[in-house]
Amino acid sequence: MAGSLPTASGRIFISYRREETAYPAGWLYDRLADRYGGGQVFKDVDSIQLGDDFVEAITRAVGSCDVVLVLIGDKWITIADEHGKRRLDDADDFVRLEIQAALTRNVRVIPILVDGARMPRADELPESLAKLVRRQALEFSPARFEFDTSRLFKVLA
Image (cartoon, rainbow, N blue to C red; front, side, top):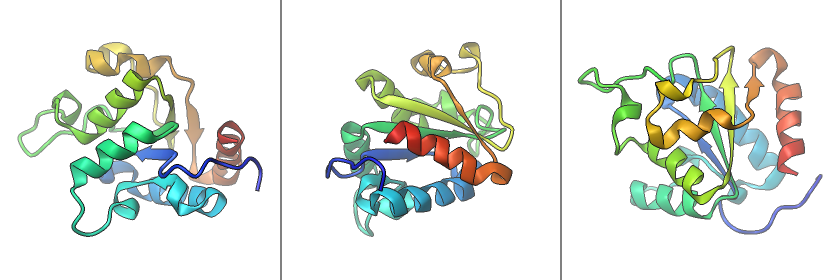
């Protein structure tokens, strides 16, 4: 194993939208967990136990992680709630809260552009997320999955 990780729980946090990037998030989680151990990687459905408070578990994980991987799909900016309101504009949206917390803590945030998605512009994001666009992104494609994950592993090592 290249580069060992500290034993703190959830060193790597995966932020994603189930509607859009659930499969890539699952593939990435499996690879990261195989390489570093499941306790080092936080992905909501794989890391939160039945009966746990979802908000508390996510807050704790973001508060203690070393890196946040933000999976951005083609519709990431425009995904709306049941009332047609863009989810990123909701101050209580989990993805927004996860990214805000990481940016506030000055944690390494790596945008992962899934399957041809583009990096959003600062004017497309709430002000609290605008610094996300200044982070170097990784392009992530199913056709280059091995290559893309190996690039990520080098950064995480």
